[in-house]
Image (tube, rainbow, N blue to C red):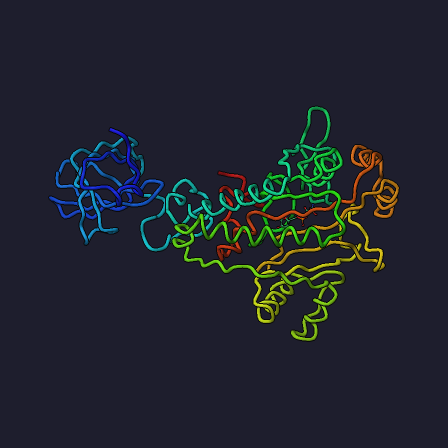
Length: 430
Ligand code: AMO
C-alpha cells in the first residue's frame, strides 16, 4: 500500500489508507483513545479501540498506521482514521520529553529549545519558520535568475578579511593561517569583472563579532548580489526594491499555510523611501531628541527612524543612503558630489538593518590609493587588486542577511529562532 500524507486525506473518500508519522498527542479513555498523528504536512486524528494498541503508543514514537478514513465533524479538520493496524517503527528511549511540544506554547526557554532542536522543530509552527525561509531563498534565486544573474559559489576559506576590522575567524590551513569568509565581497566583484556581469550567491558568512544579542549570529546566511555596468547606487536600490515587491507577492502565494500557522499577514510593498543618513540623523534629533553617533545611526535610532517612516509613508522599509567614507569599507565608491560621503546604503526593515550595499570603486589606481588611505597594504589584497587591471566596469551590489529578513518578516523576537542551528558566542552545538 502506498503511503498517504496527512494533507491529502481531506480530499479522499472513506477508504483504506496507510499513513506514517509521529505520535503528537494521546487522549486515552481506557478502551478507546484519540491519538493525533503528525507528519510533515499536518496532523490527523487516529481512533484506536484496541487496548494492546493503545498501551503501545508513546508520545513522539514514529509509527505506521493502516486504517479507514472516516468523516467526523467533531474531529479536528472534520476527518479521522479508524485504525486497523498500528506498528511502532521508531521506538522512543526517554522517561520524559525534554519539554512538551503539543501544548499551545512550548514552556521552555529558547536556549533549551535550541539544545533540543530535533524536538522543538517537530512542532509545525517552529518548522513553519524554515518553510518560509526556504521560499525566501527560492524567491531570491527565481527573481535574479529571471533577470539573467548567474548563481556562483565562492570559497569560504580565504586568505584575507574583506570587511575590515578584526571580526574574522582564523583557521589553520595546513602550515598557513587562513580566515573564514566574512562575505563573498571580493569574489562577487571579481566574477562581475570575469565576464558574468551580474551574479548572486546564497552562502554562509562568518563574523567573529563579540555581540551576543537578539540580532547577531556568528555564522549566518548571506544573500549576495553584484551587478556590473551600473550608473550609480540607485540602480542597486531599484533592484532590491523590485526584489522585495516580488518576494512579498511570492510568499503570499506560496506560504499561505505557513503564514497562517505563524499568524503573519504580509502587506504589499508600494515604494521604499530613500533618505540620506544625515537627513535621518536630523529628523531623529528634531523629532525624538535622539543624538546619533558620528556617521551612523545606532540600534535605537534605527527603531525610532523606522517608526517615523511607518507613520509618514506607511512603509516597513527605508533605505538610508550616503554613508560617510569613514563608516564604509575601503572598496566603497566615494560620492564625487559630496566630499567625505560614499555611494552606499543600508536597508532598514522594521527597525533593523537587513542590507548593506553600494557602488564599488572600479578603477585600479583609485582602489589602490584608497587602500593606502585606509591603512591596508595593497599587497595583502594582491589577487583582488590585480583583477582591476583589466577593464573592470562600474559595478556595485548588496547583501541581505537571511536570518534577519526572516526574523522581521515573521515578527520573531530573536534571530536564533530564524536559524536552524544557530552559532553564537556560547553555542557551537548541536
Ligand atoms: P554587512 O557587513 O553590512 O555588509 O553585512 C550585510 C548584511 O548581513 C547581515 N549580517 C548579519 N546577520 C546576522 N548576524 C551578523 N553578525 C551579521 N552581520 C551582517 C545583515 C547585514 O545588513 N559585503 C557587504 C555587503 C555588500 O556591500 O554587498 C557586507 O557584508 O543583514
